[in-house]
Amino acid sequence: MARLTSKRSRKTGLPPGSLVHIGEQKTETVAITVRHYDEQQFQEKSAATFEECIPYKDGPGTTWINVDGIHQVETLEKLGSCFGLHPLVLEDILNTEQRPKMEDYDSYIYIVLNILQYAESKGEVVNDQISLILAKNTLISLQEKETDIFIPIIQRIKNGKGRVRTRGADYLAYTLLDAIIDHYFVLIEKIGEKITSLEEELLQNPAPQTVKRIHHLRREMIFLRKSVWPLREVISGLERGESALIQDTTLFYLRDVYDHTIQVMDTIETFRDMLSGMLDIYLSSVSNRLNAVMKVLTIIATIFMPLTFIAGIYGMNFKYMPELEWPWGYPLILLTMLAIAVFMLAFFRRKKWL
Image (cartoon, rainbow, N blue to C red; front, side, top):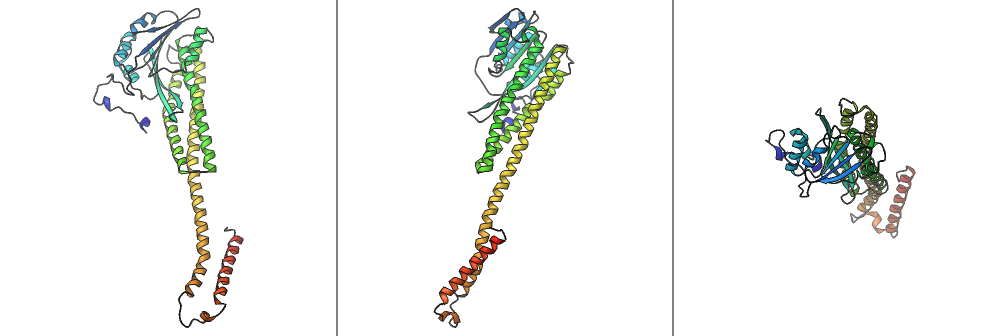
């Protein structure tokens, strides 16, 4: 449940724009990678400071500045001073529990979204927040740790394949968005396999452990919905084309990303409904099993009621009971009790109660 709530207590009482890192405390060194390219050339280098990136800011071609590690406040302050970022943007970058959103600051666009992956070792969805700052001819991406989902994009840029080398920074931003959202489908497929396996287990042999797995997946669906649902507003805001930083040719591709986002959201809602239905099926199955047990016990008790009555009568041991002196009294009573039991079993079977 910790992932479903925001921990903002460290910022209580601080003025807006105060730079405080909210998230997992890390000690790794911040890695800055600069990639500059156009149709003819491609350059890639590591930068020690953001001052080294300033010459690429307003130059020709497209510059992609990628930052792995956002836990150092001083480094983010230098980024803001070098590229003229608003203090509220830096504050949002440092808060790793942000809701996906898009903000237009005229000279640049700030986008926040989540990279979601399924950790098999933990058996849950892990989240890595990524911030994109789209300016003229420049795209800055900031994330908590290095991810491998952008490797195919980097390879295409290096090899000059695809349209990314011939387009601007807005198309590069679309490419990153598309890669992130396409990776959601990989995550959904894995969760779908978990739900299918759980459904088969539920129908064949439901157990208390099954309920725990259902509740675990339901929490995962709530977390996914919280992470993906606002993304529709983000893509819709970019698709409207109100910013001069996004070219008309890129808007068509953003519409495709919007369609993919809707598909992801529909699938998440479908999975939520399936898990709710599976919980109802489990409760019904447990209730039916209990009813079957109670039915058998009730039939057994009903059969033994007349037998207990007869045994009770002949167990009173009054002196003048006429049957006490019969030579065949004992076997006759036993046969009578057996006949009553057989008759009642046959009657129950005829009524289809057995």
